[in-house]
Length: 311
Image (tube, rainbow, N blue to C red; front, side, top):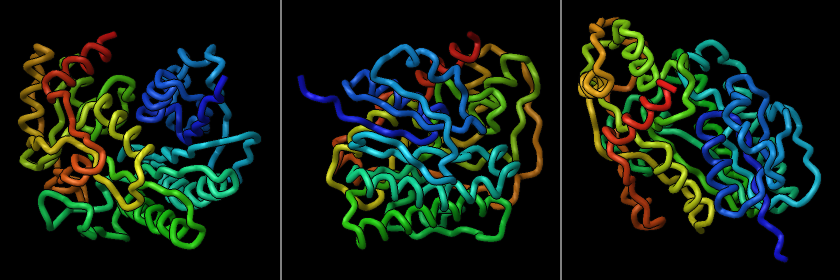
């Protein structure tokens, strides 16, 4: 019997990481999940613990990673990706993006494994180009309050490319745009769980600024499909994965209120420093190279997410 390919996922108990664990196990891979549970949740991976193709290792990837045995793919997903988290833990955010990426790359080099870095649309900052193509270098404030997240990811991309060029490591970089779905934390601080949580409790929905800033929301199932395609591709330069359908925050508010039937009011607060005004991926490259585009509409994805939050 052929050996199943082994995939190691850092941050595998988090929102995206745990969905990816399930996707890979369902696609006939074995999975090692690394997490230190600073934001990861054991409940997210509980269904996999009895699967003999799944292994959990409690591990802080900012320290040296020592995992015995054959590993075919290293997926570096570990990150403090929500504003609540990286504003509370800016140093840990910088460390997982720099030291954590270095350690994960070192493991991939040792194991002769394919390496996939989970980067972010935040590398584009508050963009001056719209929509954002992979060739755009970004507009980022390195000393602002979001700099700990933005610059850690920009460094992570730079060191990944350095390992590719110097050590000939087979590397991939994905830039993930706003993703949502079941398993998001209620207190995540990102806009979709914020609005759903507030609406279900009939609490005021908090809108920052005038609500005319835009985001592009990608449902988690679409994202994991794209990630698996990228993992198996030959592409080594960054690839955007996200939904190119652009919505204002006020449009999102109205849709959440409609789908929840909530009587919540809307309250407006001051816009946070360096908050991006526009966010929309150009996914031409993903369509061409991966044959990928999102399938789930915002309304359909929100219905599924609201149902999960109610449960």
